[in-house]
Image (spheres, rainbow, N blue to C red):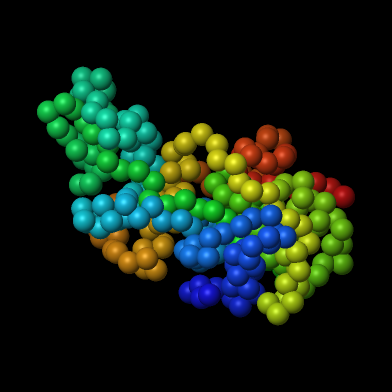
Length: 254
């Protein structure tokens, strides 16, 4: 198993995720695409499942990743592969849709037909760190989008506290080294929530960085317009996980 730019430790943990009956709590297919990428300001190794039909369709259309949150927001008003009469949309929406890159929406005699859909699904993010408190906050960035595993170099002196906090937020915890990784906490499987523009943007940004691995060029694309940087707060419930915020987590005081 190879992952461009990944450390030996990260590669070892990704290998553990493909083992049947893995104690990590998250299981990957042996052919999962592994990509090291930075999304929302946090670098991680992502295990992805590419939607091959959509990937091939984009290659044929000369379309790469669509990294404009405002475009994705408008695209979500259109059902996939179902014509929507133009008079059912506002003048602004019609203008935006007509200016989208080729391959996103077709304008037919019956109306606008959205062709664009998510190019991949992120199964898990493996986040490396030296400090478990900071590491949990960084891993929490991906709480709304996929399962998470935090990989710590060495074994912290307060391992028991780290285990409690990681378990509370549903984050898998690995300690040790590349040659002796140990599962300290099994992660929770990801439970998908409602389809959202931010979630779609996450997959598009990851797809953009994965194109060099899976083949295909992004081509000329407008600059990315991303959601606001995730906040870390324990005041709100994190979708699919206990406690935490919608986009992060702040470890509780011991």
